[in-house]
Each structure stands twice: as C-alpha cells, then as structure tokens.
Amino acid sequence: MSKRTVHFKIYRYDPDKDEKPYMQDISVELEPSDKKLLDALVRLRAKDDSMSFRRSCREGVCGSDAMNINGKNGLACLTDVDSLQQPITLRPLPGLPVIRDLIVDMTQFFKQYHSIKPYLVNNDPPPERERLQSPEDREELNGLYECILCACCSTSCPSFWWNPDKFVGPAGLLAAYRFLADTRDQDTGARLDNLEDPYRLFRCHSIMNCVDVCPKGLNPTRAIGKIKDMMVRRAI
Amino acid sequence: MVKQRTVVGAHYGLKDWIAQRATAVYMAAYTIIFALCAFSLRELNYQEWSGLFSHGLFKFLSFLFFLSVFYHAWIGIRDLWMDYIKPNGVRLALHLVTIFVLVGYAGWAAQILWRL
Image (tube, rainbow over all chains, first blue to last red; front, side):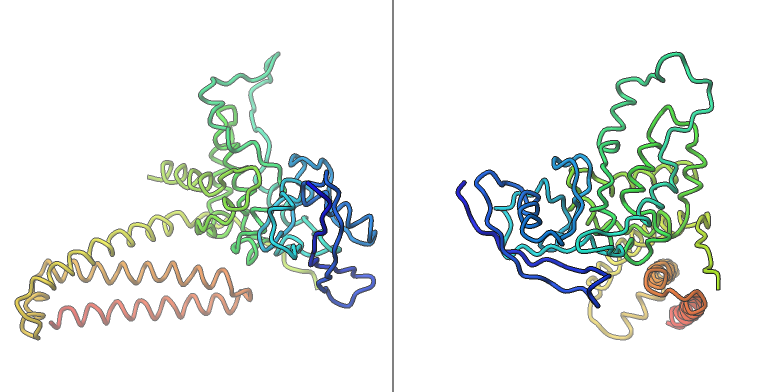
C-alpha cells in the first residue's frame, strides 16, 4: 500500500473552549504501514494534539476506541481505513454524554453492567482447585464471555438511548446471561428476579442493532431471548 | 432539590411479553380463518355478512380477535409511552387514557358483534 491522503469529518467538542460541538474537516497523509482507522487517528493526533480519543491495546481486546464510524458503531483498531467511504465521519458513541471530542462518559453503561452482578455467586466452600465444569456445560459460555465492554452494542440500541438509567442494555444482558448459563453459579433465581422488569429486560424489542455492530461477533439478542426462555420455563 | 433515585425491579413484564406474542399468533390465525370465510361467501351483501356473523362460533372467534387486538395494542402503546414519555405523571395519565379507550372499544366491539 502506498502513501495516501485520507479525509475526515470529525466531531469536535472541548467544553472548556467550545460553546457547542462542531464537525471538523481534516485530512491526513498515511504511511504505507497504516492499515487501521486507529493508525490514521494516531497520525491525526500527531498533526493536531488537541484531538481526543481513547485507545489502548490497538488490537480489539480492550474496547477503548469504540466510536461511531460513518454512522455505525465499531472499534477504530479493527476497522480497515481503506474500506471506509470518505470523508470518514467520526462521532462519539451515540446516547452517552460527551466528555471531549470522541470520548464519552460511560458511567451509566457500567452502572447497568454492575447492576446484574457480573461475577460468579457460589456459596459452597471453595474447593482446593478450581470449580470444574463438564465440557458441555462450558460450551454454553461460548459467545457470552468474550464481551470486551466496548459499549458499541448498548449505544446503538434505541431502547438504551431512551432509558439508559432503567434498561440494562445488550452488553449488560449478555453478561447477565453469561452468569445465568454458568452451571457453577447458584444465584439463578435472584438474577431472574432482578431482571423481571418491564424496563430492565423487556425494553428489548429484538431489533438486533447490537448484533449488527458487535466487533466481537457476539449475539446479545440471542442471549436476551434465552433469558426470556428461562423466565418462561420457571413461570409456567 | 435532591434528584429522585431511579428504582427498577417491578417484577412484572413476562406475562405481557408472552401475551403480546400469543395475541399476535391468534390474530394471524384469525386473519386466515376470516379471509377463508369471507372469500367463501356467495356474494358480498348485508345478508351474507350477517349470516356469517350470526354463528355463535364466529362471534366467539371474532370477539377473541378483538380482545387480542386490544390487549396487543395496550402492550404496544404502553411500550411507546414507556420509551418516550419521561414525566411520570404524564405517563401514568396516558396509561390510564389508553386503558379506558381500549376497554371502551372492547365493549363497543362486543355490542356490534352481538347486534349482527
């Protein structure tokens, strides 16, 4: 790949300086080794060091650089810059308060995540070694535990936009099912009680925006469906 | 003023979710039954229509259909209010108005059906 120039339209907002957010047109020349959108953003920041965004692992594991890329949420480090239509429009994740430029305040998102008790509850005395599962039981956790909490899914969900304080959101519900599906967990009844609420769980109308954007290819809608299945099975 | 804390955990929602699906299935089934009956009429006139609706079973199925529509509509419209209407008082008022209107419609539908 040769040197090329990439054009951006980026959401800028510095609450200390700007009265209101604006879109900035900016271009940057990429080196042949620059493959991902994150590489381009790093070049951009070298040009304008006031540009703010989060990043850390640069390989789709930490989930820091989630943003709205040409209208669709995704991770900058996993998105091929050459696959994007120019000018590449970058906005912060929708629905969360903006701290600065592409950085959002994720307090509400993590509050919902914590509300589902994202840890194993088991009151038996801990065994000397790990709590074992059969390979089949362990299989159930595939497609659930891989979530990196980047918030791409929850911030693409209209139900989460309208009720971020009440609706757990796809990421939280995927994590909730991760523990509901875990045979080592003993808190199933309380977990289902906690979710049986018209807002917390039943705001999900299965529109599957979450599945569409998940950079890890996970399916929160299916997990939410399985939570509802568990509730039906225990109620009837 | 201290902001009111958000409280969730109302311990309902499952029945409505099942009801929404069950009523949808019934409405789909009734639509097919109704279409078959309507197309099997010899001609479209008042006598044929009232003949169709004079059967007790057809009245029963039709009334169940209207109840399904109203229950389905209640959950759907309630969801709209829950999504978009933030002030609790306004939302409660809209919930009540929706219930009153739908219950009224159900009575009206029954009256029309048994008049035919």
